Image 1 (tube, rainbow, N blue to C red):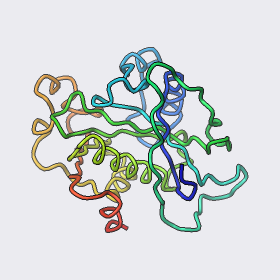
Image 2: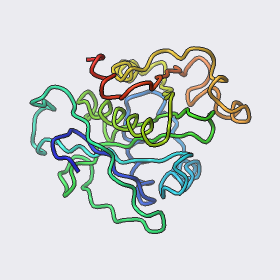
Image 3: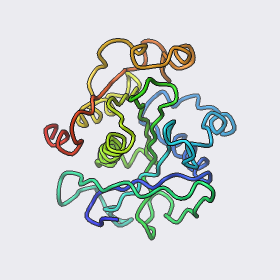
Image 4: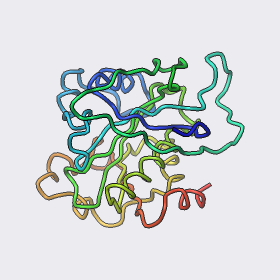
Length: 236
């Protein structure tokens, strides 16, 4: 693992389900988190392959680990470089055995860095070559520090190189202006065409309107046609 980057992505394990739910419940970066379902409902919607790596063509969750995390008593999130340097995703653990969770809780330094959020990609409901990205941070205080942007760029690089993904979607709330601006920095723009151009017909009814309903969901897309690192340099 490189040590000069801002984040790395650690494959999630089953034990992370509760942590992710607690982070989402605590994170108030978007009004859409009001009315969050209980943990059993949330966990039941997330299939096992997201946490054990058994069907990486369908989707996967990762923990966002900040390798440049400041000390606990730091007063701000300033970085000497001013821009995130992205490190590769670590290798997935064997699908037959979940490794222990070694990082410290959000806000604490741990042996592999500071866990600051989670990110996922989902493909099972989409046409070949398309993936939908989702992420949230462990606490709103971690926003605007570049962690989400760096995590997206890291994940997009892997999706393009290893899974042959040519188009990435992300579908935030229309009211989450901060997230929309951050996604624009990664190269996302309003989706050309309709969601039906990207989604398999049998999934349009349950997923077509997005998490925030018709009119409340902003459909953004990014065409992966060259290395993400090179593309991101033009968005600074």
